[in-house]
Length: 191
Image (cartoon, helix red, strand yellow):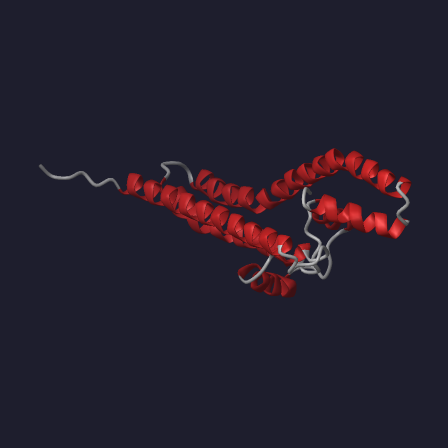
C-alpha cells in the first residue's frame, strides 16, 4: 500500500509543532528567569531597584539592534504603560520594539508559506500573510496591557495592608524612614 503524502497537511503540522515549541520554550525560559530573580532577591543578592535586570542576553542584544532602527524615545503613553507593567529599565522601549519586530518577521516567515498553500486569490493570500504578521506585531501591546492591569490590581490589593502596617509602625514609635524600610521589607516578599 502506497503512503499518501499531503504537502499542505505536512506543512501545517510542522508549523503547529514549531509554534508550540517556540511558545513553550519562551514560557519555560520566562519561568526559569523569574524563579532565578526571586531566588536571588530572597537571598539578598539583588536590590529592590533592580527589577529591570530581568531582560538579559538575547533581549539585550535585540534591544541594541532596535535602538538603532527605532525612534530615539518612547512616547509618554507607551513609557507609562511599560512602567505600569513593571518594565522600568532604560532599554525597556528598545526591547519592546525589538520583540515586536521579531514577531512580525517571524509571523511573515511562518505565515507566507501557509498563505501560498491556500487555494484563494493572491489578494487573500497576501491578506493572510500580512494580517497574521500584523497580529503578531501587535501581540506585545496586548501583553503589556494585560500585565499592567494585573500589576495595578496587585498593588490595589496590597496597598491597604501596607498603609495599615505603616500606621502600626509609626504608632509604635518608629521614625518615618525606619517605618518605610520595615514596611518595604515586609511587602517585598509578597509583592
